[in-house]
Image (cartoon, rainbow, N blue to C red):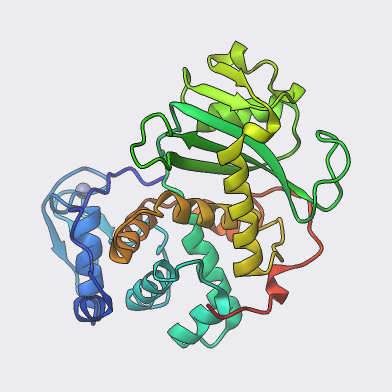
Length: 331
Ligand SMILES: [Zn+2]
């Protein structure tokens, strides 16, 4: 992960399409915007920390002390891209302005990309940036459940089901703090290998702050949750209302946006996109989503992202359909 902090000014984002087009009409304007996000207090050499630099004729920054040359995109999601940043900005604007989700065919059309595969890869790369590195864990009261993606749940839980991917869900119950009566907080989704106690504990530890109250059903895989630093409330399965609601939203979204035809090799990146959209569902402005995605792109590790796009970093089980064969649907 790049060793710097991205902390631009929160309201410095385009307000609408006209504003977007005016602000980012040239490559230089995109570079300047990235500079302001990556180095909000001015350039800082990633090697020696010196603040003085000069711009080279190739648009690089050369540190005046150690003479190391760096670019504003080095070590970010845009590392080594051969396409103009303007096109990446267009892609991010398009994706964040789709209410439900973006598909590769739509992106290909909007950007005028020659290849569907390139559009598909861009989407996957950008989905990597939808998860903020080092994000905060969930806290308070958190409902946990699991669901199979790729068909109806069949067979006994914990034994696995052929051709289905198991996804763990954690979602904050904010009903006690909410005045609007909705009370649903943030969500985390993760592919897990099985519903064993070990897998579920790993998921909980990775996604929920210690000391939080975990609400689950009576599945034996959750029996030892109280031994790893959490309060544990066992509820009737039918009382896990917000977990079930989020699972049905996820399934509907996969079905509506991707016709449910998601290869589980890439399911993780769809889960990331759903999480990004769900956790920002109350965001008042699409421009703010664009800004967030861009900001997180600067923090994304280009190497691990390439692995995700290549499907190396994910779970091995398969679902028969392949996302490459998707008939994109307009929305
Ligand atoms: Zn230096």
